[in-house]
Amino acid sequence: MSATPSASFLKRVTPGGWAALAWLAGLLFTALLRVRLPGQETADVMAGVVFLRWDGLTMLAVATALALRGSVLLTRRPTAALRHLLAAAVVASTPLSVTAIPFAQYLAVDVALYVVAAARPPREALRALLLALGVLVGYLTIRLLAGWSVGTTSGLAVGLIAAVAWLLGRSEGQTRRYAERSRAQAAEQAVIAERLRIAREMHDTVAHSIGIVALQAGAARRVMDTQPEQVRQALTEIETASRDTLAGLRRMLGALRTDEPGTPGARPAGAGLPEMPPGLAALDRLVESTAAAGVRVAVHRVGAPRALPPDIDLSAFRVVQESVTNVVRHSGADACTVTVDQRDPDAVVVSVEDGGPVPGRDPARTGGGSGYGLAGMRERVALLHGEFTAAPRPGGGFRVTARLPLPAGVTAR
Image 1 (cartoon, helix red, strand yellow):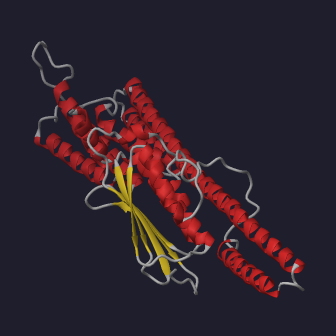
Image 2: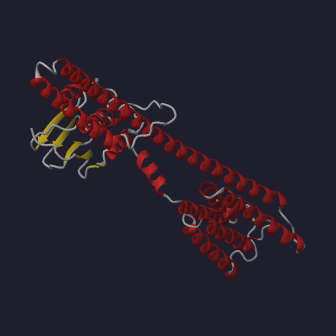
Image 3: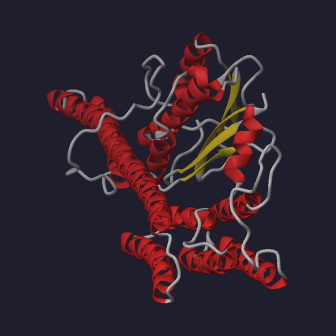
C-alpha cells in the first residue's frame, strides 16, 4: 500500500528538485571518497591541499549556491540553469586537486542536459550539449597548457555520460511530442467522425420529412377537385414538415463540412447500449437498457414539456445517451440522475450526474474508452450554438450539462 504515495511523491519532484538532489548527492559522494570509512585502511581519494581549508570550503559553498540557483531556474529557463550548473561544477572541482572535472560534480549538469534536450527546440538542445562538452574540454586544455597532469580518460567518461543523458532527454522529448501530435490528430478525427455522424442523422431526418411532403403532395393532387378539406390538411402538414426541416438545415448544415477525407471509425454515441429511437421520448427505454447494465437511472423532468424541433430533440437525447454510457463504462457508479429542464422558454437543458464509484466497483473494470465522447458531445452542442460543460462535482462524481437554445415559436404541449 506504500507504493502509491511514493510514486505520487516522485511525480511531484520538479526537474529543479532533481538537479538539486543530484548536486547534493555529488557533494556527499565527493566527501565520502576523501574520508576513511569503516572497513577501509585508507580513503579512496587523497584530499586536496585546500579541500578542508577556509578557501576550499568557500569555493564549495559558492559552487553550491550557483548549483541551487541553477536548480531554481531549470524549469523556467533551462539554458540559463545549465550555465549556472556548469560554473558550479568548475568552481567545485578547483579545491579537489583533480586532473579532470569529476563525475560527481557533473551529476546535476546531466540532469539539466536531460531537461533541456527533452523540453527545448533541437538547436537549443544541441548548443547545450556542445557547451557542456566544451567545458570539459576547456578544463583539460587549461591544465595541459599550464603543464599540469590531465585526466583525459576521466574527462572522456564524464563527457560520454553527459552525452547519454542528452540522448535520453531527446528521446523523451520526441516521444512526448509524438504523443501530443497523436492526441491532437485523434481528437481532430473524433470531431470529424462526430460531424459526419451528425450529417448522416440529419440526412435521415431530412429524407423522412421530404418523404412526408411528397406523400402529402401526391395525396392532395389526387383529391384536389373532390375533397378540398383533405387538401387543406395535407398542405398544413407539408408546411409544418418543411418549416421544421428548413430550420434544422439552417442551424446545422452551415457548420458541417462535406469534403472531409476518410471515414474515421469513431465509437458512436451510446456504444454498448441497445439501439433505440432518437429523441427525449426514448429516455424510458434508455433507463431500461441501462438498468440491465447494472446502473439505475432516475429521470427528472422539470417544466412543461414541449414539442422540440427534431434536430434539438435528437441532440439532447444523444448527449444524455453518451453521458449515461460513460457512467456505465467508466465511472464505477451504480446510479445516475438525468434532468430535463424545460422551464426556460428559450432553451432546453439536459444534465446527467453521478455520485462517483461505489465501494467494490472498480471503474477500470467497466471497460476502456477512447476518451472522445466528451469531444463529440461538445461538438454536437456547439453546432446548435448551445453551451456544454463537463466537470467533476464538488462532492464527488461527475456532471455533464448541455443547454440547447430553441427557435422562436416552440410552445408547451
